[in-house]
Image (cartoon, each protein chain N blue to C red):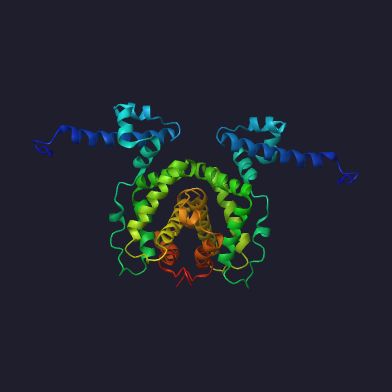
Length: 201
Length: 201
């Protein structure tokens, strides 16, 4: 049975398909040639669409890259169940982040690619920063204490980005090879510190 | 008065001069053209030396880059006076790192350049990782507790690299604009956690 309702115009399904095709083509080309050597024209050609359509859906190449490298799973799913009753939310947060990357090699590759491009392209850095902040906010907004919230989120991002870079890019042996449980135990209490410590004492 | 002793062969001073000239030329070209578009030949031409001499002094381009981007000041100087009697060494460590970068814009630019190149070049990442680990070890080796030392250093690197990236590359507002004292107060206790917390409890 066709999943589209009889009266629903075909163009809607088509445009979602095209959007996906563009994202997939962008991912393939970014991965093959690197970000700088990938043109919007080449992505359009591979996706079989007009370049104007890519601009229409995504704006510029930076925005397309960030959209293409977003995780496929919603943060709410990855971090579900961190509530005010949760004991040691920092430990659970670190474990969930690392489990997500370790069990989804493709998602991990995207996150690493995103970090790499962010570090060398200022406009992308700003988008990645906002994406990370939003993610931490969705994950821990239910438990963080009320004062200094933006600062607390920013500090959690600083440790989480540093952990990802140490583990997957700098390959610090004691971080790269450590089991997830150990890393969650080591880093988690420091995330809790950022979430709950009295900053005005 | 000539600072060279009368009998000392001129070639020694010359070779130190040439080494410095090569490093300076490398820095200028890396900064102008980026790492990937800078050739050893171009560095040799700007320095007025034979390319073979660069290979002789530094090995390959990756090694030359890391040498060119090393801080000019020794870690022992930047972190002097962190002893077992120091109260809150993590806070002092964070303050010294940030003060060093804030008062030496050129050194800060080098550190950022080093991070940027490390994140996109695996062999450089390994050299930068070893450089960071050595630095943390020289800074905090006198105070860190004896068990799990390599792990503790690695975790300190993870937070410090994350702080640098958040402040200077991702420009997280609450980190980028925070006064040094505030960041030292926020992050320092977590560095202390990595240095001293009981990891086997």
